Image (cartoon, rainbow, N blue to C red; front, side):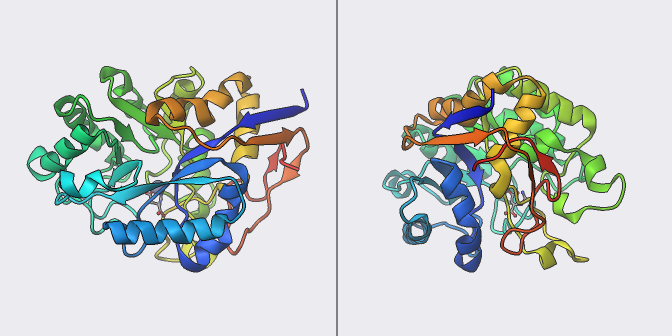
Length: 331
Ligand code: NCD
Ligand code: ZN
């Protein structure tokens, strides 16, 4: 087989940024995907209807004539009530514990029922899913595992609320997915393809520094096993998070891996290497359509078996797989 067609691929965790960066990076997502869930951690974060609509407008201006539907998200605040949420056009509310990642300082200080319960109740009543960056401020490699009791607490207390564990990276997180019918997960390409040895086993590679940090090869294998089991509660979300090269190659380096330019080529290469190509359509579109109950624009992306060496930089940002070889290309 030398040609693959993906139907309406979706990227359900995407940082499109704003301003100049949006102009530079948006096109990579708009051309490959038929829709994506746009994260709200711009500066300032998206917390009002006015900001939400203004940001959607700036994104759509960049989408131009491409067939791409931006699904918008709102940055979680414990002050949100039903009246406010009910007339917003959003797919999720995204909860960031305060300080755990880029532009999350305005997030929730303590993720407990007293603090977030009223808002979650309103979301559950309205049928708005909760998307979570699940990490504590503990040891870097334990942060996601330390957050597991919180995932469980929320899933248990709000059984009708869809809770999406974003960019899962730890084998212990995989174990709770099936314990609660209302728990779902996104998985990135980098957590499937790389582990902490790629980040710091040889020379330190700041372009592979992200939150949640890449874990052990065992964790990577557990994430692979989950995705390659064809699990229907798991969907693709790239967490493509561009930071300018100088911001990454710095003593104060920003967290985030930029994968947008090579996502589908990378996914097809990886799925084929594991002999699981037949599962890719579900992972990159059908599962998300069912979980979020969405019908994205119809779009077909054709990939051909043509090798490519990934460029070192796209618009001043170093991508995932820079200088590495992929076996498939969008021509
Ligand atoms: C993301 C970013 O830069 O916005 N960074 C990251 O390391 N993944 C934020 C996030 O999703 O955590
Ligand atoms: Zn993210």
